[in-house]
Length: 120
Image (cartoon, rainbow, N blue to C red; front, side):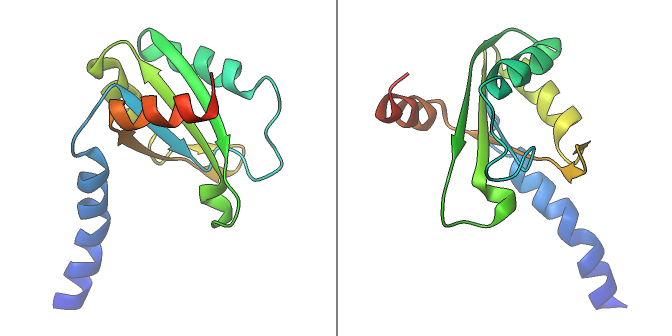
């Protein structure tokens, strides 16, 4: 019974961890798979996320050598932390095109450094 309780608490801990340290930048993973990124994806994601609040920027990154659900990462930079938190609450765990979205927060400085390395 104790093991069952620990298993039930595991997802709660994970969600709490993902929700810790909220920032204005939200990372969305598993919205699309590798090779499914099209030129409109960033604009479509930005438009979808605008319902939570003004979006400064949306950047899509495809990473090789990682699990399929980790391969496409979408960084959505909101104007306010409140908008980012609203988006997190609505999008984390939501299904999109048969895939379950995983959302988490990214430090603003880390996001800026990542984006400048790639060139805007």
